[in-house]
Each structure stands twice: as C-alpha cells, then as structure tokens.
Image (cartoon, rainbow, N blue to C red):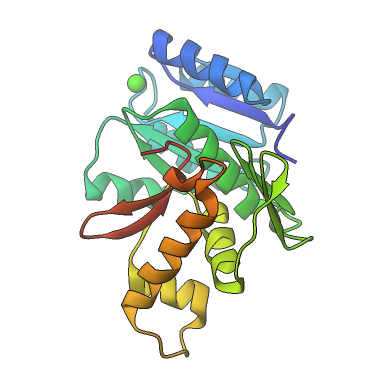
Amino acid sequence: MLEGKHLLLVEDERAIREMLAFSLQRAGFSVQAAEDVAAARRAVADRTPDLVILDWMLPDVSGIEYARSLKRDEATREIPIIMLTARGEEDDKVRGFEAGADDYITKPFSPRELVARIGAVLRRTAPGGAAEVVAFDQLVLDLAGHRVTANGTTVALGPTEYRLLSFFMTHPERVYSRSQLLDRVWGGNVYVEERTVDVHIRRLRKALEESDHAGLVQTVRGAGYRFSAQKD
Ligand code: CA
C-alpha cells in the first residue's frame, strides 16, 4: 500500500517545504526534504525514493533539468516524478512531461490534492499494477471485492455507477469530458448518448449522499466531471 512509501520532496521555499513535509508525513509517507538539487542528489544516493516531488524553480539547478538527469540514469529512471510549479502555462506542462515528469501540479494547491496525486501516480506506476483498495476520506473502493463502503457501510451501486466510481477513484483530480467518460467507462464501441453520463452521475451522487461523499463527484462547467478529494 501507499503508507510507508519514501518520498523525496525538493522545494527551496522553506515554508512550503515544511508544510508539505508535515502533511505528507501525516498522510503516512516517510519524507526526506531537500532545499536544492545538490541536497536532493545526496538524498537519492543515500536512499532511493519511491517518488520525487520536484519544484520547478530551484536555486542551483532547475527542477526540469534534475528531472531529465534522473530519467537519464538507469538507477533512478523508474522513480516517478511529480513537478510543482507556480507557472500554469501549457508550454511548461509539455516541457515537464517531456523531461519525464509523471504528473504536474500548479501552485497554489492543497496538501490533500498532492496526496491524492501521489497516490494516483504510485498506483499507476506500481510494478504489480493497480492497487486493490483505494480510499478517499471514509469512502473505500475494494477493487478485488468489487465493493464500495462509506464510513464502514456498503454503498448500494448499480453496475454502471460502480464502474464510474471506480474509474473516478483511480483517476482523481482530473477533469474528464462526457465523451472521455463514455470511452473509458462504457467502452468506445457502445452507442450511448452523452446525456446518459449525466443520468449516471446523478445516480452516483445520490448513492453517495447519505455518507456525505456526493461532493467528491464534481461538475466542471463547460468541461465535464472530476473526482476530487476536496469537496465542492
Ligand atoms: Ca522554488
């Protein structure tokens, strides 16, 4: 599982570094913090992290260059990287991914969002494939048992709502359009109208209402839907 995973956090701004290290430790991770790339290199030599959270703007070497060097080195190539940046431009995002970042998060963000992204990246990149259990707050998806519980009680879901929720919980904090959801949840070959998605989203929210988790399934106006650990 995710708990006990060792993270390297590279961030030069002390207040952010300390706040994130505290939140990540509280989420159950072991965290090594570094204020620049020189310190990050020493930390990696000392203990290989399971994931690197890497600020873009650093005083010695830029985060993007350090990401490239991690990906060039066979010993560190497999370590997933999440880039942190104050910039939000598409160009930078593309450069980040080209340098080998597995995900990208724009400041300001909440520690909860970062924890959710870390979980998603670790699950996606885990050698054994996806985790069997995914949890947000008190909402728990048991993929092996094909079951969802909220506050310890089973949530009654139709088969489509279950597939929708399990897709969302394994792909959090991202917006999916109705047609993307049709492709990913219903399967591309099935002919279903886009408004069908809205119907099932409504049913899913209703099923999550009782345990107060309906707010995790969010409408993003003009774009689609997102599952987020930060309730609306
Ligand atoms: Ca910085």
